[in-house]
Amino acid sequence: MKLRSPSTKPAVLFTSSVWLAATLVQGVAAQQSAPPALTARHSPYLPVSVSQHAKNYYGMMKGIDNLSVRRTASGNLIRFNYRVTDPVAAHLLGEKTATAYLYGQTSHAVLEIPVMDKVGPLRQTGPLEAGQEYWMVFSNKGGPIKAGERVDIFIGSLHVDGLIVE
Image 1 (spheres, helix red, strand yellow):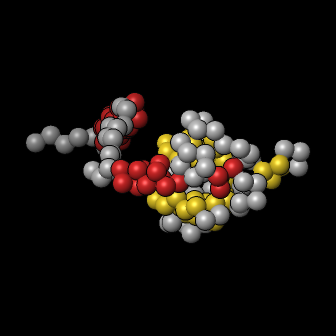
Image 2 (cartoon, rainbow, N blue to C red; image 1 turned 180 degrees about the vertical axis):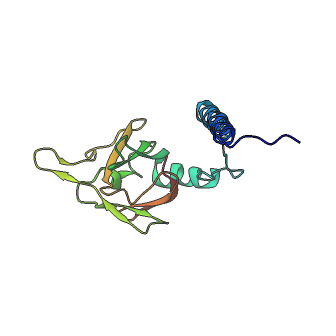
């Protein structure tokens, strides 16, 4: 049996460590260049919008339909849209003295309509016309109301319950 000389041991160790380092670098580079596997996570539950019975009620008794609540792009404002079908029944929506509030059911936040110095309150008031769409904007400063949350709207004695923020 032939023994190796002591001078070949460091050379073998150096060569094997270089080979190991090169293999590790290639493995890390391959992992970094590979795109991560994207898996879309969808909820199996569907959001429940306003029931047909509630839509009929608001249309017949309150004189409004096409109700929607949406966040603006910045998220600092929430816009409530509606269409008037009966101006006499929906007269509360056009009154300047009727105070409007938006209440978040999950966050328990109560939002008001902001008042601008030169413009006034950010809502449409005055005589209502059948078939016209109207809006009002609520201040969501700090973002307490999130998309997907259910909200209630109170305007005088008019209550609209369970709208989903889009």
